[in-house]
Length: 191
Image (cartoon, rainbow, N blue to C red):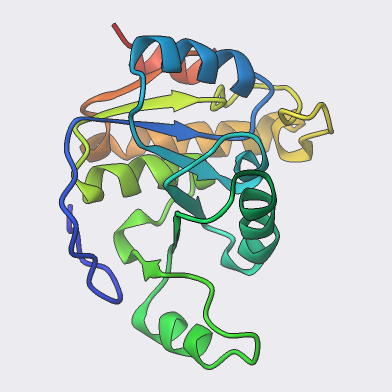
């Protein structure tokens, strides 16, 4: 595990962090997490940016981040940083974009074939959090938190691919817990 980012991220974090994916269980999981661990930092993943107030936004799909930044800003205001996965080359290309850079920090080690939510769990670890609580990350068949169809999660082969990628990332499993679905079966519930 390397905590190298582009540019260098200089804050040190510890304790618990909520990683909020956009699965159908998000609202219930988030409410349970808030009662168990009130006032802990939140990483909103993809469309969860329009559902929960976050200190960090994250996606492995950096090209879609402007939409999720707008959701977070419109609903909850400013006060968050934006994190993506990428190399030094990608970071430099993004800096040259006409619409300006919208990713604050690029994390090469947060790459994941196991969805953006699993990449966000890896981000939480490199940021220094020891307890990572997954909310809205069931990695099971279902919809997004708004009820819209989550196509990839309705395809067993793709879902199996994501699950195998998460299982293979054994070096990132310590301290991860989940409130719902397959990830709860694998990592257990927070206590």
